[in-house]
Length: 382
Ligand code: TRP
Image 1 (tube, rainbow, N blue to C red):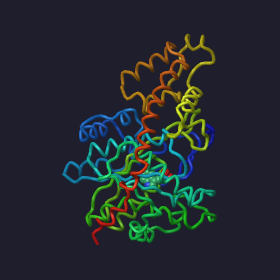
Image 2: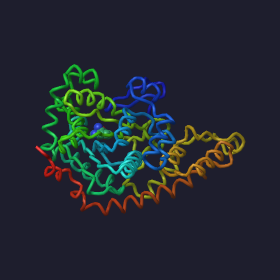
Image 3: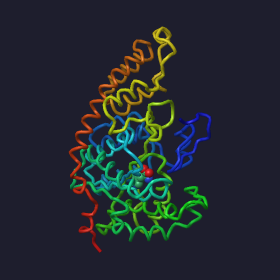
Image 4: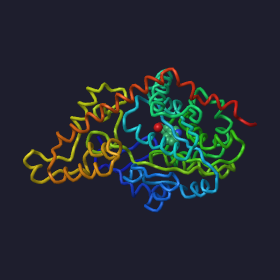
């Protein structure tokens, strides 16, 4: 678990220490999503979204520009992705559900990059067979959320390199080794695959424009730790004559333990989408909360939902209804509800969600190819 007093480190490959999101906005030079911008998004989307309202998505680049273009009748496309280094947990699904909302409301395409090359280069022990396995497994989780094949394109970096390479070489030529070292903190011990990799993560930001032969705005929903990639991508965009991609950035979804993000390396801190309901239930019942040492004390003094992992799960996924959330918040603070009782509310919701997700995932098992970016080969205008 993250040590609270440790210095904050946030790079695309390492997140540790106590995360100060205001400081990250400053350090990375992104913009805060304020009430004015939230209202603007809701107006264009035709409805509110609780993940914006509750601040999970908190930072951005160029969203105003993107919405200006949209208002002028210039649609955008969405690009996001996943490094397939293991099974997906609930924390991963939350931003993807938001991506689905954006895609539906703004009627866009989605390009979803599965960076199996990245995980091969950066994870010491991973083999090609393993990254291939998780590319497929993780695709099932994304598709289980209900994306449409007509407008959803899964890019498998290794399999679809022919689609990416022409743009990749153009990007790579514009990024010097000293920039890569400064932005990503590469050391001399980094394998040269890792040094090349950021060029490939930039590519899908231009891919649609390259395919259709004209500039189309791009929106990237992502966790804030990916921002260094977009700084480089935006720099290169100018040099290659493409639009700079806009982005909408989320905080890390906390795990069930104290502090830190939901971590795949600590299996009890994360509920995996493939966990059996019984195990998921057990993880919920063991979760870290903001409760007091004894029931008597809690009845008297109340508990603290601000530090509670169960409350975060209500807030970010299982209680989209504001009144219900406010009610549990009040009961928690006043001592009217104890943590055990509160977990008893979360557990069945978690189990029901998992059962539904697992059934949807099962349905996609023979359908992944319908979403393959290989179809784009026929669209490329050269
Ligand atoms: N590097 C990301 C990861 O390790 C995967 C990724 C590729 C991605 N392209 C992206 C994430 C675009 C968000 C947006 O998970």
